[in-house]
Length: 160
Image (cartoon, rainbow, N blue to C red; front, top):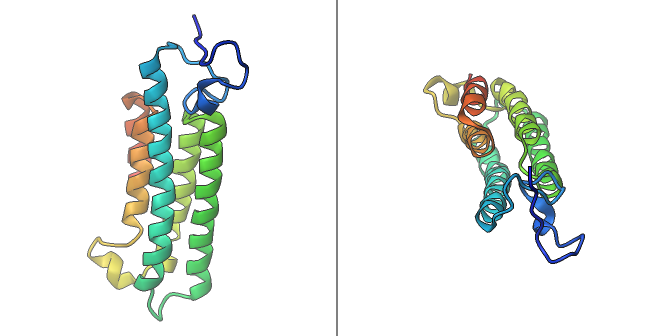
């Protein structure tokens, strides 16, 4: 398999930090369109994860009522924020790889398990909750990085 490098002979001019290349600056096909698509996909996944964290930090406290202890809500939101920053670092360093997006799906699934403790029951009875977009972003990111044969089952597990 032939690997392509960006930049004429420089070791650090490789794929602009290798968004989809696993940080090694290599792609299976070194074509410019593959590199551009890899960078765009990485940026899009980071925008989804960070944007979701910011929106949840704003909306989560607005949806809280007296039935939700503030410390639980803060714990979920701080965990989401910390994970989002770490996810960004991972994607920037290693690329939008299968293990990174599967780790994202697992972290988000664990945060979704906290829903009964941070979302009032009245808001979950009708199927609406401020945590629903959190699951959606995880599903979108899975579909960006994985082939359908892997991405769809992972999305079903996250949604479940």
